[in-house]
Image 1 (cartoon, rainbow, N blue to C red):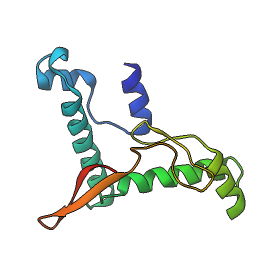
Image 2 (image 1 turned 120 degrees about the horizontal axis):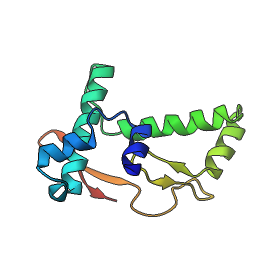
Image 3 (image 1 turned 90 degrees about the vertical axis):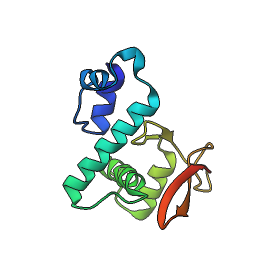
Image 4 (image 1 turned 180 degrees about the vertical axis):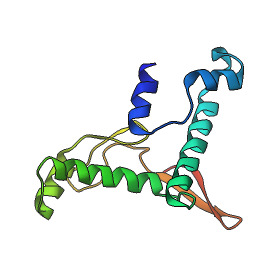
Length: 130
């Protein structure tokens, strides 16, 4: 329940935990792959409804970057230098629930924070973590 509450703060999920359990038959049958796919499908439908277009490859990252900037601006940063300094100091929890922060050179701290994509049959597809 705590995870669900936290998730709904980030993203307005259109289904309940009980509905998901009913889809798979029991809570024991629920696995992370099914839940991830269901949430991603739900997010894509919400995006299409709001923007009248399918989400792009970097829609989530653009959303998170916007939230980062709005957070530091709402905290009082107004110049380019102030915004840059505030972003560089922040620990930001992105839409996936991962806390991100930056190195002194501006690169992301940690590994596995970037995704790798390939073009297959004319479509951009996720091929793993970079």
